[in-house]
Amino acid sequence: MGDIYEANWQISVDGVVSTVNMNYEQDQGGDSPTICESAAEAINNNCTAVFRNILAQDARIEALYVRKVTGTTRPAWQGNFLAAVGTAVGTDAMSAQNCLLVNLRNLAGELKRSGRWFISGCPKLSVIDGIWLDTYVNVTVQAWLDTVLNIPLGGPDGWTGALRVMRTMVDGEKQDPPIPV
Image (tube, rainbow, N blue to C red; front, top):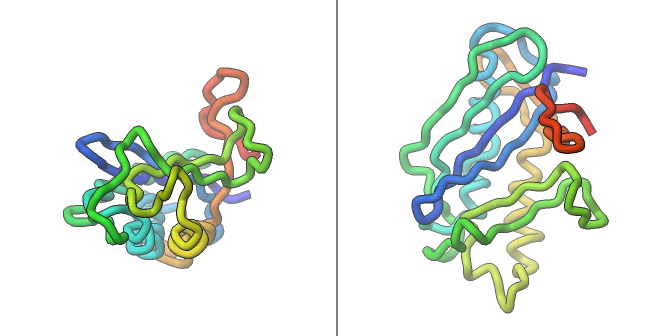
């Protein structure tokens, strides 16, 4: 098993910042002091444009923070975005208290299961009578999910990674580093 990296996307809607946390297992690349920056560059190059497609135009990606959570300690890296506003149809994002739930492995819908993302900033136009539009979920969101599963080569260290579901809590106890599911 390769080293695990945590990538935190910071999204702002109505002055509230929320995060979408992803964990990647490194497939390729070195282990230099700039490896987190390389991972962030690879993730950014592969995912940011498509991530913006699922966000309303008044939602914004503020930053991408990457840290190495297993193996030799390396400096974390954060890249701030100046103009990464959403590009989905609609200028009215759902409030930060409402979100799109992306369920990575919990088919039964259980509450205490690892592998769920809560995405703030999705366009209100994509919900009709409380239900997400099929084309939004199965085309737009799916296109973004396809980009986050496996990150191709990027950065000066040649980092690549594969998305992994990790447990950060077990019976109320924080797991640091997170453990694979």
